[in-house]
Image (cartoon, rainbow, N blue to C red; front, side):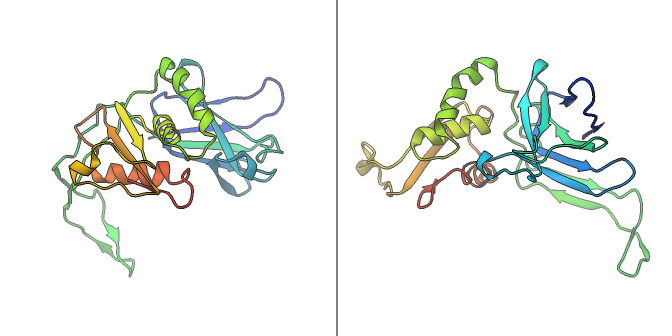
Length: 245
C-alpha cells in the first residue's frame, strides 16, 4: 500500500504528478482532491472513460505511462474535466504488485488470524474475539509484468481502431489485449457457423461472441477471473443484444 500527496501550485514550472512505483495495480487507485490543507471538503475523482461525457465540472483524472515505466496522472483543463486550483491537496492511494510472483497464492489455503486489540459491540462494550479462520476458495491470478514497448506499438493502433466499443471479433480481442495482462493467446469468434461444429455436439448461438483465452500463468482461468473479464472489462464496451461467453 502506497500513498502519495501533493499540494497544487500553478506558478512557475508545470507541476507533474508522477507516482513512485512502476508496478502499480491501477484498478486499486483512489484519487482525492481537497480544497486546501486546512479547510474544504474532499472529493473523490474517477478515471476518465469517455471524452464526450466530460464538462467543466467533471471530477475525473487522466492516467498515462511516462519515463522509466512509471505512471503519471493529470487533471482537466476546465473544459474537459474540472481544473485544479492553487492550494488543492491531491492524494493518491494504491496497491503495488510483484508481477506474476503472487500467482497461485492462496490455492486451497487455510489461514488463521488473531486481532491485536479488542473490538466494541453495539453497546460500546469491549469484546474479545478469538482466532479468525479464512478458507480460500480460489487463488491469486492475472499478475503479470508491464506491457512491453513492442507490444504497445503493435496493440495501440488496433485499440484506436476499436474506438472504445466492441462490435467485431477483432474489437473484443483488442480490448482484452489492452486491459488484461494474463494472455498468452486469445481467440474470439461469433456471428457465423464454425467449421466442424456439427460433429462436436456443440451449438453456436446467434448474437453471441465466444472468447477463448490461453493464460500466461496456469492452464486455465478460474471462474472468478472469467467473471471479472466478462463483467468488468468487456461489459462496458459491448453493444446491446450481444452476449459474451
